[in-house]
Amino acid sequence: MRRLHLLLLAGLLALLSLLANCAPSQQAKSESNDLTAMTNAGIFAGLTPASLKEKSTISSWYRIYHPLWQKKFPKLKIKEVKVADDNAEVTKTLLAVNAGNPPDLIGVHGQLPQLVKRGAVENLDKYYEAAGIKPDYFLKPLADYVRYDGHWYGLPGASNPTTGTILYVPKLVQAAGVDPNRMPKTWDELWTATKKVTKFDAKGNVQRIGLPVDTGLTWVNLYCGRQVAYDQATNKFHADDPCVKDYFRFNKRLADFYGGIQKYTKFISGDQTVWNCSPKAYILTGKVLFSLDAYWSGAQMDTCYDVVWKLAAPPTPHGKTSEWAALAPVAWVLAIPRGADNPQLAFDFVKYTVWEHGDLLGPTTNGYVRPEQAQAWGDKLIETQAQIRNKNGYEGNPMADAMKLVTKGAELGRAIYPKDAAAPYFSEQMARAWEQVAYNRSTVDDALERAQKLIEANQKQNGS
Image (cartoon, rainbow, N blue to C red; front, side):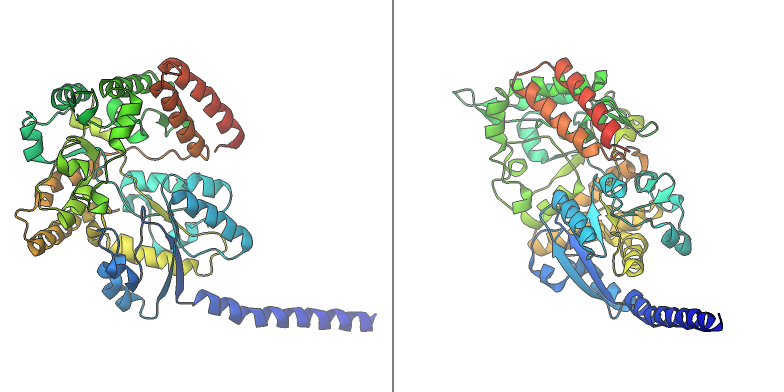
């Protein structure tokens, strides 16, 4: 019996020795200064010196933050893994987590619920608690979106102040017969102005439009003056809400006015956009007069064109500021994949860069995440755009005029991305419903009621 006791004791000591030998490797792992970030241009990108060669205004975080990183993280080494878009970010994250070699940091927009449900991202409660950060640290919608059942799973990366404003070039609007100082404030006024400015050639092909066709959730909410197709309180989708149907009808009327969806699609596909610095961008040439957009496109225009642009208030049902609650301040969010090598470093990197120094985010075309940063963020963006325009020899600084509108939207907006894992399916069915309506294959009622049934079934099976 004594021999058995000795054997058991020897085994226990061997196990303790093994555990002790494991401890240093765990400690070394946590102290690594290597940060692997998976990025795409629609979220955050340009974390390395290579980004200094890019022309786009969103191309280089390195240019802005590197001096700060050197002070806070002097030994930091960033490996940036670039992917095409959000979908690629999600797919590659899931594959990497399953393979046991995920990056330390990723960014997504409305795909966070999928990753949470599949257990692909870390519960971050302990990091928030250790940092003493509570929900009221952030703009309210940003904190709402990254918490699930009271737990933190994401890191607010940027706000959207303000997607949904009307971006326009005053001299082009005035030439088309609309007073640029009295822009449409309601959807009815926008429809009236669109009819006034739209032009066709002799064959009936549209040559200039007012408002583009768009059935995205952002515009649905603005049209209804509330977050309508998704209810935060109940976590339910309402694709068949009467106001959603009305917005589809509005866009169908718009597409038909432009000669039908096929002619409209042919026309709009020729827009090379300001993001390519193309001299043929429709907002620059006046082929699109009222673009539902945001300040960041104006910032990009400062980089590329000698033109004065402006922002007008987002259109709402009655033109009331109270209806701005329908705006969605949530932009993209960051997350730490399950099994990341350096989760503490990733958290500290985001906390320092985006939260403590979010006032510098403006030149990257991203909005601040904390309410008290509004003034400093706006001042920095105005200063940066002034420098860009002065360097290019352009007069004026449109960003200075736009700033009050921009920060006001961030303050008043309350809508968020759907927090259910069925959100991508919801978006897919909304797009399919619109296609059926646009090509006259279904009525609005039938298309959206069919979509709602499919969404409910999918949410029951795959949601939450």
